[in-house]
Amino acid sequence: QVQLQESGPGLVKPSGTLSLTCAVSGGSISSSNWWSWVRQPPGKGLEWIGEIYHSGSTNYNPSLKSRVTISVDKSKNQFSLKLSSVTAADTAVYYCARGLVRSFDIWGQGTMVTVSS
Amino acid sequence: QSALTQPASVSGSPGQSITISCTGTSSDVGGYNYVSWYQQHPGKAPKLMIYDVSNRPSGVSNRFSGSKSGNTASLTISGLQAEDEADYYCSSYTSSSTLRVFGGGTKLTVL
Image (cartoon, rainbow over all chains, first blue to last red; front, side, top):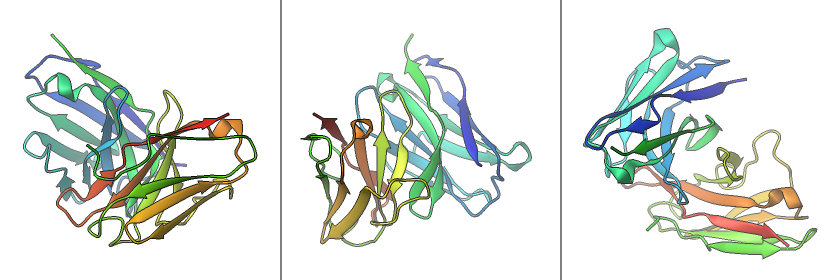
């Protein structure tokens, strides 16, 4: 069965760039699915960040679009998130998730990223 | 402020049924049959419970059901069990440039 695992630094300095990777195991990232990033600030709700298809096509949340880049590495069966010019408001648990039509059927365990100097 | 509106909390006793509402607009909930529901226990990742308004993924108990009327979707949990105590989030596809929107979440307490 498909599993997702996020990895990356847990602490990022203000104005820096947050970089995370989601490794896909038990299946191929080249399947007919979109792959998303979702975040959840402490004690708050979920926010969709963006998604990518294995072809490299992307869609981003307009509220973050100017700062977000999602990329895919088919050779490593993984996809990545970069969020630039981060502030304390970007502190959150970041999840990667597999898209099932218009829902998210498989989620990674999540990784906490804190923006602080 | 979340794009979809959910009650902050609901509660019920074991064995009872509860319903959580999710209100949007004709651009999201009302316009498409792409509403999904997620269960999230503290410190855990969300889990898909319902997709496309009323479909259950394999392995999800048939005590969970979904429906939609106009711009409001609903999640009903019957035969409440202690393990159902969690946060529940709705989500919908939207024709706006945002593409995906979530509700603010509902905390379910099993009394």
